[in-house]
Picture 1 (cartoon, rainbow, N blue to C red):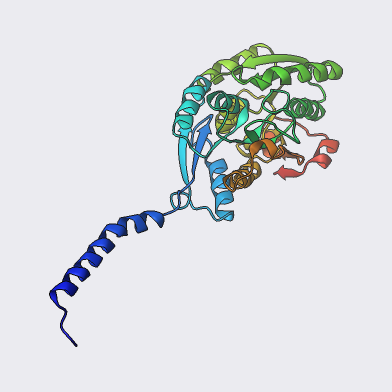
Picture 2 (cartoon, rainbow, N blue to C red):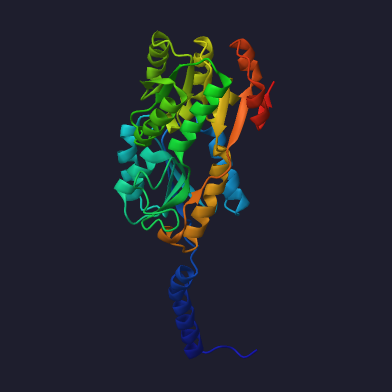
Length: 332
């Protein structure tokens, strides 16, 4: 092989130098794609929402997302103190996450207040239209989409079912969170249904878990014969504590399914874990370019009645055959 002269060696050196200088630009043009980030705004706590979180993560896995690999999640939990939701939502907005995921009316309102541009996916909310979160179910019109259900009508149905199970009951307590705006609308529908059923309602407030013992003492002093517990992030996260207090105070209670699973008397409502598993489908569509304003709000349509006959026996309640026949599931 012929030797390279001085001129050739100089030319080779120049070419090598050019290649080294160009390498960073080539690497930059072939950089790793951006990993999307979800801002998670939770109204309660991670421990209180363990089953819902697992359902959410399973929904992500179903779509090929692996948290920490091709998707990042920034978690913020209000620990049941709704006054913390606004600053936490502002933190997520400042991080410029790709999507904010939240649940319930207080969380959704806080997210909307924090941003009008970042898409917001709400796992489940009591009534998205009635609370002004969206313009309509078919065309939300803003930056919010997700799942909703008619909580006022659902709560009125709970009162009706509890009255059927307790034919002699004339005084029923209603446990609500005054920090949740949807509960004012729920109370309106409950008043109407209570009047039709001849039932006197006693509204009892609980903003945090620290209010629970006092709330049940108030119910007992008011001679309540039954209890309706409304859907709310803080209340759902503390279903076991509520079921325990209801049993201790011998109050047959009806509410969301987490309650009856923890030992309460009855539940009637939507499957929250199913909605949490479904939520990533909204996130996925947005990450792929869909606009939340054009993604219809999905309305929950399946409701289940679950009876806990173990609790009924302890409470000395004889459940009428007609109510037993209507149950979708019975805990014996």
